[in-house]
Length: 305
Image (tube, rainbow, N blue to C red; front, side):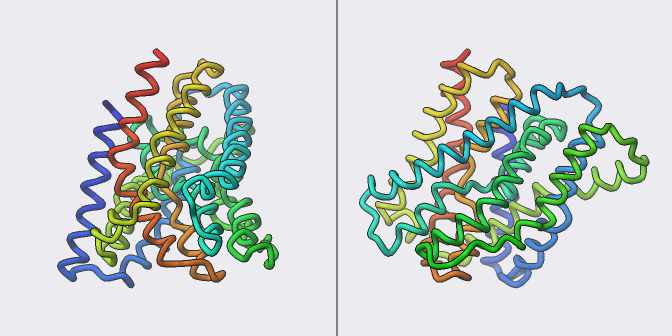
């Protein structure tokens, strides 16, 4: 129920961005500027705030469990990316884009805000390993996949503000370094921008598309339902059998059930993939996830409990 309520709130933010753009109060250029603010300021501060403003004690062994889960998470999706596009009959020219959309979930723009809103900032420390691995794989395997193996991954781009903030939060977590109250307050204030701004950006980007085109692409719709419903439910039923920490399971569920990452569209545009297909996939999975994520949560925890 908590997840459903928070997804409803985030959906309202998204609709504000969508309507404001349709009414021409916002435009795509403004969306890009907001996106820069989320990626370079609000989201990184969310990871740091998760540690410096968290009063609950988190066992280090639980963090190690999350690191192992993150490794298994991406190993699973890398394997699934080789199977799912073929299973739904994707043509060869589109396979790279579908592999990207299968593997990379929108952890930053959707995952972090949902976790913070539904379970508190303290839960975000469990999401940091997923974010770091996302950055590593996205700029290496992701680029090579889009280019059909003809392009080397851009290792330099792995060192970005998202990775750095994740590493800082882990160091602060393990070293228990005291942080001035002003920094704690600043990180809390800036991190609170992440949810509203990220959903405004998503709403603005969706406004540039015809919604009817999203829901008439049968292949893409089939892919979205498998990615957002079948895969998370199956994976979560397994994880809940071996992990007894409810909060870790809830964070893992959000990581599994978030839509395709916006980076799929951005990198497709930059490295010769089908940008229109990637943008449609990101938009469709984002819209559907508002409904599917609470459904997955109810199914999984009703059965598991």
